[in-house]
Image: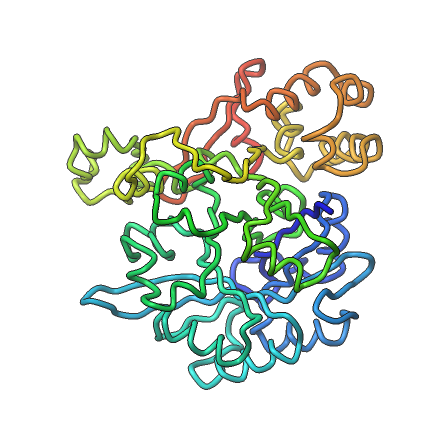
Length: 405
């Protein structure tokens, strides 16, 4: 059985999130998107944990209004190691409420849990692994958005050059890494040190709407939908494919300096010694540059047996660009809903629908653009230093970025 899972999201209790990130809206929009299993996000937050326990039913895999959930959280670790400041984010998957409660109890002794759904702690990744494994061997820890500059395992500003350096001899307890929006599996394949790990993708969504929820996801091969089966799929590379943002769309793909409007490829940045030509300060080194620094394989290398991936621009963003309307407008949602009613879910429209089906409820341009998206034929101006990339529709001479963010 193949299932679509998005296991890294946030609740309304995280900073900079929509107040609609509750179970009602998450369930509603995840079904529209075509997601089978959703992470709860933020189970470390006392109020969200209480709400989850009250509203979810089940054991391991929980359910609300027909949507299945697995208990998940993200924590930020900020510490010093080998004389350098480190800032690493990790996803935690817990098999049930009892174990999640023990995780919260331990974390509560290390710092506050009530101020943010993604809490910050001053201890290292090795201590995290030890503590989680002491609670339960069934807990899964996944380094989040592994190449993001400021807060990740390999981040150019505060990360490590190897996963072994980060996790030491506990690295055998790590089974997967998350690509993040600014990288994809092909970029990760260039690092031989990652061959032993599953490469997973999730949305890190701060909004319940389908243009955020499920923008990245992982399709797992499982016998049945259960927490144990999903964890087993992560640990044993039972991944059918991942659904990816185009990495160029990610807001840290290229190098740059947002304040000066400077965006550079890694080669251009190196020619400038990684200095902004306008203000003469250091550029924010993006994900592509960081991959180039760490890679020991050429671009285009694919390890034997690596799971494939599919890159997609969310449907509402395509509709918004083709029509010249905002993603939240009635015009966009009217077309969106007709397509969903015709095909069943957003992923069905983006990945499977025939051109004739799409055209029947929209028009020729919309159908051509959705197929071009599926085939990776839409040009993208790369994102940099916190600025999202801008896919360009040649037939409209407009960037999707004008409408989608």
